[in-house]
Length: 288
Ligand SMILES: *[C@@H]1O[C@H](CO)[C@@H](O)[C@H](O)[C@H]1NC(C)=O
Ligand SMILES: *[C@@H]1O[C@H](CO)[C@@H](O)[C@H](O)[C@H]1NC(C)=O
Ligand SMILES: *[C@@H]1O[C@H](CO)[C@@H](O)[C@H](O)[C@H]1NC(C)=O
Image 1 (tube, rainbow, N blue to C red):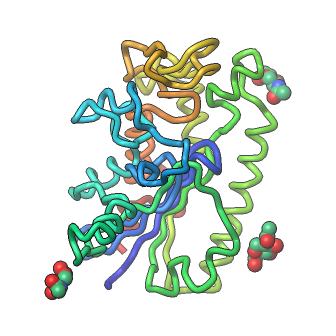
Image 2 (cartoon, protein in one colour; image 1 turned 60 degrees about the vertical axis):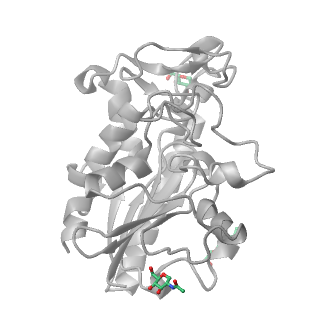
């Protein structure tokens, strides 16, 4: 199966914002495998009949090429789309769309070799589920992992603290990221054949929040879609107001970034300096 890269990124909430990718690499990467939560869910949750966490109503997808809600928790493309785009690949299909084809007998021979997206909005990390899977033992040797973002700075938290970031939530992100980074270092010492690249989502978001103008952003506090203070007291629903310029907002809804913000993170993942991505960036990881 060649070299594989696994990438994980959690932007804000562990449960909302963790994602990872793995690549089967031939050229740059022939296929993308995505693991994570709503940051990179491209429609898995649409297949979960009991989940209420679904991006299926307007105004989700308003800037997506189809202009329709697709299950992405964004106004447009999310990081899974943008990573694939940077690699010149189509977005990997949701795992549940592939298995539902099998179940419905529409297509008996579904191939996973073109990439699969396993991300599901609301996903978390479970110790028990790594036994006999996770990915190293099946050949994954390259990992792109990203830490948790500044959870306390998302609009849903800011409304709880007079529109300022909630320190306690941010402190938890910092602690999580420290533990994650030491785990990665230890893991590489134990397994000399792996390579990884770590994206400091927390630092990347903090820089957007503190220097918005240098990235073309005007509003770092409010959600674009929602209602109430900071558009964060009532979720993004068909009745919600939406901002007219989705390119100058970091946040699309109370938790999730706009496509514009996701593009900046993905650019930093690929080409960023070591203050955001270390010990190597994704271009360098792909080149190994
Ligand atoms: C299923 O797909 C694989 C990969 O595309 C192909 O090699 C194989 O021949 C197919 N099998 C059948 C029964 O069509
Ligand atoms: C998860 O697994 C690690 C490593 O095996 C262990 O140290 C830790 O206590 C476990 N945590 C929980 C909540 O089970
Ligand atoms: C609220 O914001 C202020 C200003 O950033 C900060 O000092 C304070 O710790 C925050 N309060 C909480 C509860 O997070």
